[in-house]
Image (tube, rainbow, N blue to C red; front, top):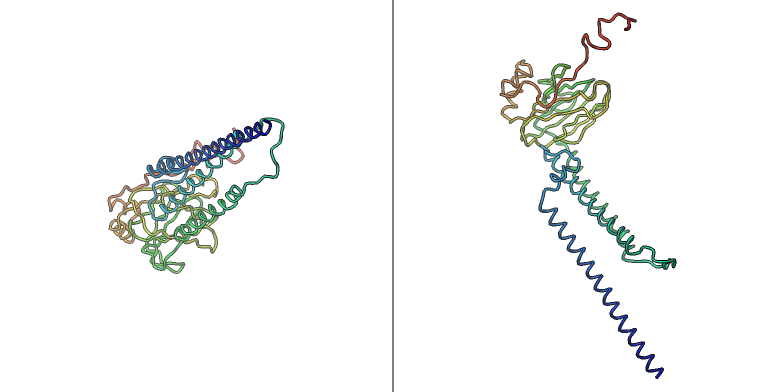
Length: 323
């Protein structure tokens, strides 16, 4: 009787263990299925809409007008999506562990147990993610900073406190000649006129301190250095006509925030007419009117120098006088 009873209990235990193992396998399969469905839903969501437009570019300037700006924008959006995917996965694991392995008594869990697949995952996966991001970043960076021997248009960008001068050149380097020039003043915002469909080379230099040439829709900001340093970059083409505000993106002094200019993108025909008018001695405003463009900047306004009679320190004030 004792043997038979023991045998019955042993059999019952085996059946119970089998049902528990099956239940665990079922729950594991259910979790995997849930993860698979969640991943599929996320993939459909991300491919079915413009993620960058939906989330305002994740802070990146939208509406790029050069192939280089589009490549940088795509890299940024893809990096943000990858970061969010990894973040949601990690957050999910954290909350699952908090709930699944919360304290249920005073007995400590086994302290020497390890999980080889999990250790493999958190060791290899970050290396793979960083390697992929590094590869695509290197490809885009190499493309964005590339220059050519014979660009279609060369512009010398001269920065000074607190304005800009744009010189249209007949070649590359310091030995080239300036054929036309646009100079900004405190009263007139400088307008840089460039054509669509042509490669453009920018050669930058500063007359005093470090400035930074930046049109958000064009490319990332490019520093303008004083001295003999000549920062050079190119864009392969401008794709969209219009007026775009340009800024100094480096703190350079009292009127740094007002050191703006305007990039006016026109057709190649209008650009040739504009340059011919400038070479003939016309002012920038008259040359713009000649090609049917607004004579003054539309995207920004001249800064207020506050040099008037209402100023806290007017020019007419007697030295040492006070109120």
